[in-house]
Image (cartoon, rainbow, N blue to C red):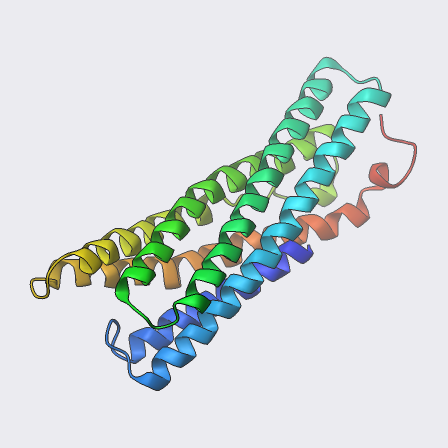
Length: 242
């Protein structure tokens, strides 16, 4: 729940940063717009790192708990398989979220060290974020699958629809790639002839800065709801787990 709430905050800050850049003329913002967007981006990276570590630790704890259930409780074969799959998937999701958080910290350091220095630094940070977004796809897919399997292990109407972060992760990846690749081209090519690259950057900004945060809202709202539902599933709070 805490990780989901923090990720919603991260998404709001990302959207705010891109909206500020869009209002202040995109690749050529004025000083006030650049400062405001930079502060929003730094805050988004910090909150994103916190959210990643919270989700990573939560997923690893889920893996540990599920392993314990599989070890100490006898269950039908299909439930045992669900326990093993949940432990495996949630463990991998936890490590992936921790890696994403590490990438966020590295991006924070790079942007602070080279604040406003060059387009090349922005391109490098974008490429780093693109690589981290691939890791995020793995984390989102595995966590979504693990939470769905929890409902198979402990069936209860309180769960509702299992949360899925897949749409958000893929939308985010597409947006970041549309940003990173053109920025790299703009950084290494001679001046002039940048219209196509600028169009791709604008498209990437729209997808990563608006589309991904909207998708994050739906996905992580379901994660928070799923966390709240754990308090209404009696089997999770006593020796009655079968």
